[in-house]
Image 1 (cartoon, helix red, strand yellow):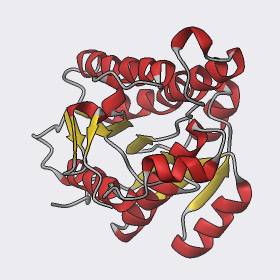
Image 2: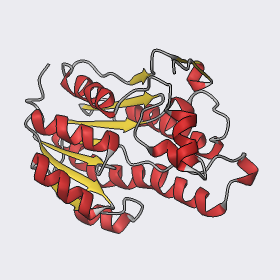
Image 3: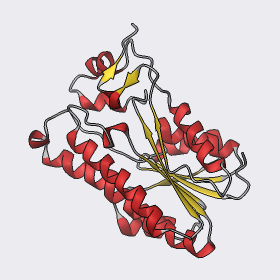
Length: 247
């Protein structure tokens, strides 16, 4: 598999976890990578490590996204930026949490598409990789609004393929199960309790596992579009509702 057809990539949510792992792999693959996140300090550290180009940017701000990304002629867009919120029933989710989930998970994705897809279509080449979640296709208790946003991403990937039919631009959705990024700690008031609940004793996926999946779909022959890939830990099943604890 080769990435020779691609030169430039944009990765959102790149400051840590899955996003940072994807940046590292893309840089090893020889691409110029623009790493996007809100945390300038973490991006600068990643830039020193990998040689990526850091862009401190809030993807929910459309004008700023268009201004920063619209002229980059990106061949690859990895929409990885995502927010989580504390566990709650749908009717109990705090309005501020709802706003954050919608702003980052949906509005941010659409803003990045607006900045990059016109150029991809004009050049007849490009690849959009949207990071979904098993929560978007299987109900998970305690994460209803997050799951709603990821279900919307799942639907968006399908409509993108229809909208881009015949353009040469590929669209892939990668839907991970539980990945040990630390993001799950935001689901509980007590971070130590969150670690016990989600990580301790579980053999979870690691960020590098998802980065390798991204490299696989990008490196597939141009005739081949991996439109949907679900990746779960061996010990996790039924969209996450069943998880075997080894510890």
